Length: 284
Picture 1 (cartoon, helix red, strand yellow):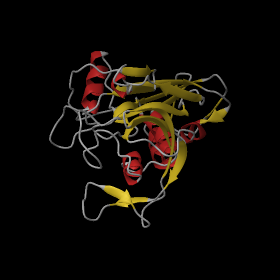
Picture 2 (cartoon, rainbow, N blue to C red):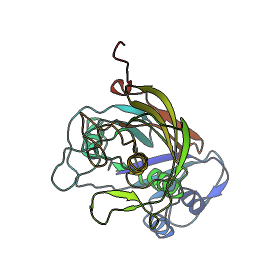
Picture 3 (cartoon, one colour):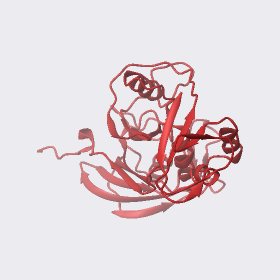
Picture 4 (cartoon, rainbow, N blue to C red):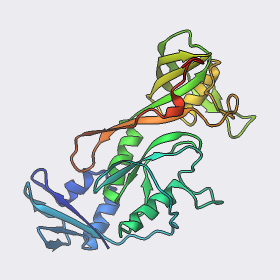
């Protein structure tokens, strides 16, 4: 059984407390009906008021059919509610039905090594060849709270990318809609019939006909960065789908900012630029 403890930040009641995590009303009623909540150790089966600094406990059973894959993971941040992993390139987030050697399986194995039975809930995905930060919620309340922020576009995401060529404009905003390519099912293109997509970029360095960029996403379309820069004739280095292949896709998610589910304060998680992204002159 999982047991979560929270100190009330203000006077309120159980339904309002759970709703503040953006948990569905049906789920809230089920949790109360199943005696999954307690106030200061007193189990409740109906909505109940509490005071600031009271202890709220949530207890529930959790199961998963995921298999552990014991490999080392790079942890960028961890607390009782979330864990942020710095994902390596060429690694699936979750199983495609053919392999259990995924980040989900690795995170689950990490929890088992800590004697914690936690169902790994990734908040978002990165393409298999993209490296960088991925957020996992450790329990259903944190997942509901973070998922709401993701759906509303409140989570800030920034990337490093290396593109082919020298950008004419050293900074700017690409505002071009993106839709699926009808002729190639795995590919997306700039299309008038597509969904709005907004990408902001800034050139950090230019060397040997390649440019290192810092990129901020204002929307979250599939392959958004890759499609936008390929459309501008500056495909990402290593992009086999939209450009030319190399040792790896040069795209790294280095920055995340969101409201923490427990503290309700902004949290920033940042990684350093990968060494292979530091483009150099031949004499360097």
